[in-house]
Length: 176
View 1 (cartoon, rainbow, N blue to C red):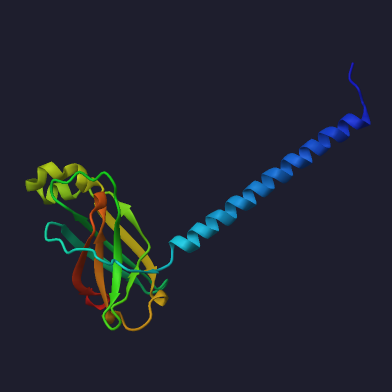
View 2: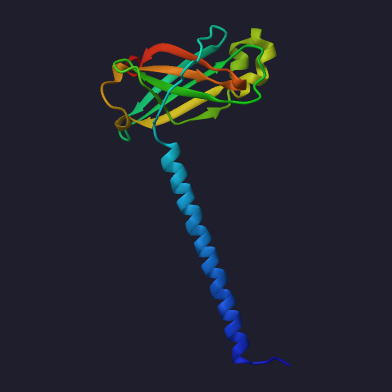
């Protein structure tokens, strides 16, 4: 026999409201967290490579720099690796060095898979696993930089496996 007790309905309504309230609060917290990540990861940061060495053992290439005139975003793509080194920890950053001040800024970036390098460098057969995870890409807005493009030199800060190597590509943003 079903009961039409008004107190029971009220209890279920309260429970439903509390569930909806907690779910809404959780979704709001998730949206705020995602917004924070988007803002903090998508910005240029000043950095200091400090005592980073220079390394002739690093093979690298800046393959492309693309500027989208509609969105005013730059995209830089490339790769860096030490032949025959297995990459256990990946940490490779694109930096821009202001040639007037000497200051460095770190661009927002991400790792990209580069299995195509196996075909380009068959002589590095022992580095095939490292080649899969040696790519990088950075996307940033022109407005994030002060001054002229030719005063910024692109650098690669190679920190894979605890290395600390700064590579000055000797290319400015205006040379692409």
